[in-house]
Image (tube, rainbow, N blue to C red; front, side, top):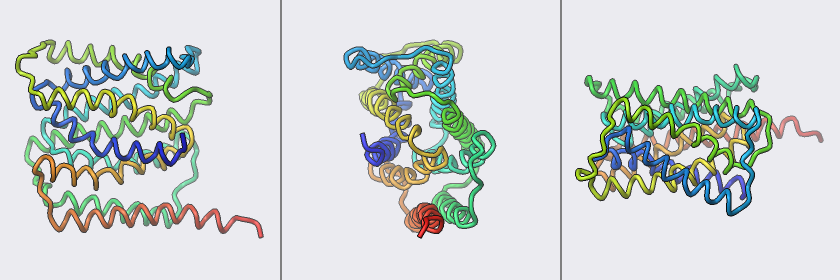
Amino acid sequence: MPVSVAYLAVVIIWSTTPLGIVWSSETVSPTLAVLLRMLIAIIPGMVILKLANINLPWSTQARKIYAYSCVGIFGGMLFSYLAAQYLASGMMSLIFGLSPIFSGVLAQKILDEPKFSGLKKLALAVALSGLFVVCFDSMSLSENSVIGIAFILLGVFFFSLSGVMVKSVAIDIHPLATTVGALTFSVPLFAIVWFLIDGTLPYQEWHARSIWAILYLGIFGSLVGFLAYFFILQKLRASTVALITMMTPVFALYLGAVLNNETVSLHLIFGALLVMCGLALYQWSGKSKRLKVKPA
């Protein structure tokens, strides 16, 4: 699979994920919704591994990459589902747009990646200012929204940390094996959290929209999405992969407005333009640097 196709797949899937999380948690408790999602993802994942004769290694290095991946799946997803009780889907996606900052700093510390150039710092500042403009109207920090923002920031941290830690493991492993291995580590943790926090199964209260959202998130959001994500994570820098979370807020906000009646304002349009300009500047700064060092 071309890296560009996998990258685009992650952008599209993750743009729909916040709305799916909100819908799935409408009538199903957040801890149960995320557990069911991961169970739906791991079962076909194991079947595909078997049918495609893809090896699921269990060496020390393999278990390490599964554990590091689990940090992002468990920490990132659990806190995102908890945040969905307090925040709109578009707001969740916007705050997740901070991931490149977390990833960039962590990658410099853990992977010894080069520090951001002045132009890249400017690009990130432009993109982040766009995120701020978009969410400015909605930033009336009630007690509930503060709790939601705290949860989603924790999710961003664990997601970013996981991406950087995965890059630190030198192993040639199929992305599907990484996905299934990480889910194998994650599912028991989700089950424990559900049992401790909720522990009930009131299926009579579940609505069709929540059920369909869980199915979609399990198959596409988790299995296909994680497969594409781990694939591009092997091919690109952690900070570059994290830029996906600066694109998805624009699409997530649009979907929230169209499908979930979330407000669209001039701030949204202006902020979205700033985000895209920041991304373009970030990519251009990397290309311009390579052109400068290219021998004559």
